[in-house]
Amino acid sequence: MWRARLTLILLLVICFSLAAWLEPRYDAHFDKNQPNQSVLATLLGDGRKMVADYFYVQADVYFHSGYYPSIFDQARKQEEAESDVSHPEEGNAQEEKGFMGKPLDWIDAFSRHFHPSRHKHLQGQAVQEMLPWMKLSAELDPHRIQTYIVAAYWLRQGLGKSVEAEDFIRDGLRANPHSPDLMFVLGEIYLQDRKDYPRAKNLFLAALRCWHEVEEPKPVKADVPEEQRNYLLLEQILGGLVQEELEAGRPEQGLAYMKTLKANAADPQGVQKQIDELQAQINAKAGKTNSVPGR
Amino acid sequence: MSKIFAVAGVVIRELYRRKDFYVLFILTVLITGLMWFMNFFHDTQIVRFIKEICLLLIWISALVIAVTTAARQIPFERESRTIFPLLAKPITRWQVLVGKFVGCWLASGAALLVFYIFFALVSASREHTLPLDAYFQACWLHWQMLGIVIAMTLLGSVGLSTPAANMTIVFIVTVGVLSMGGFLHLVAQRMTEPSATLVTGLYFIIPHLELFNMNELIIHDWPIAPWLDVLAATLYGFGYMAFFLLAACLVFRRKALN
Image (cartoon, each protein chain N blue to C red):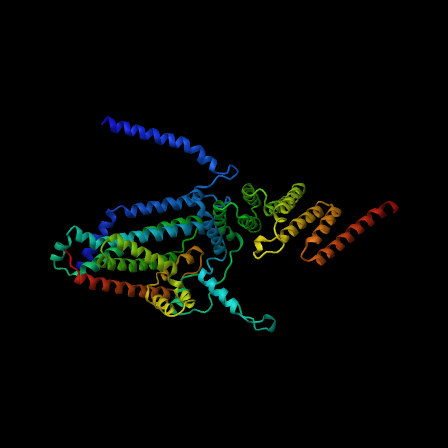
């Protein structure tokens, strides 16, 4: 009997010692800079990215009110697109029929009475319905920048919830401190919603710094669009700076940013036109100011 | 008919004595309640997400109740040897089997009704509307689907050796048909012969359980399905129930019970 008790105590001591030895190692295993994980993220482990993708798609499903192609429908559509030799310029382009196409058999036709079979988007206040999926997706995969941007867009444009959008973008920045996209969106919130021009400028400048830091090492052209340098974002950031300078009443500064924008723009002629217009405005203003003392 | 209902009555009493339904219902209430109180951007009007989670839990719970109840009926009677005194009475084997089916189906229907009442309350608390016709259609079609699954499980319970094997196979088949059944014809299009014909044949043979799933219409507030189509789906369900029950009766008729 005493042997059994002794063994039990010995086992307890071993377990306690092992726990005391393992615990600090376990803690050190995780990056201290990582945000605290939710219970769901901890439970799912590395599979959480897959679930996060699913939740993100689910938000899109909600945006289309459940009318959404399955993976099989997507494959069929891709096949049809690849085999489509119609030429829109010749006027024989196929009319868009939605992903479902014609029913293939009576079961297919009958089943459409029990599922959404028309294209419809969420409108007005109803866009709130897709936000839970976005939030869950971001919790599971905090490094998916697009989730924050899309959610912030709908919060601001669809629901007028600028404060919530800012909080969400800041959550994203905590997980991705060097993301130029998130900095830019935060700058837009300060510029358009708060009219806080100094902060907006600081954020756009920070976004510009981050863009150079993150995007410049990337190749100009790559097979996968996500892997190539994002010039569109640079245009957006510079555009934000131009807008901020104009709204703050500093058109000369705006003109300087516009010239930088022209060098990186996809449509330099369009930017040049804007530069000319702005220059004309500045000249006209300067002329007016000069003519006042002579009056 | 009275003999069938006498057997069915015993099955129904068994369900409310067992704890499966209560546990699953409380779990559904708890998880839905947790979702109800979740804060998404300080928005208190979000409802579709809660409806989706609640309906998913209802589908899982109803399936578990139906399959576990039906799978145990015949094997339990054989194991406890109560099948012999039962068959010693003036009742035929097919009456026992049909009685078991009716009992399981009615018991699942009663459980389903409680679940859908809860769903309607949760939904109404946020939406402030109660589309009873849509919920009735959803609950009715769901019940027909459970009827097919119960009939299939009873066939498995007289054909397969153990209830565990039967339950596992029925769960896999049901989940497989619900998620993939409607796409088999699309899969077949991309296949070469003879597998294309085989998969197409399978597509037309299997009971399309996904036809009874109206969740997307309810979640996204689409108009209800035409009543004539609901009737057609009900008849389609009856057809498969009759087929599986008949097959189960034929197997059970020749089955050695000792």
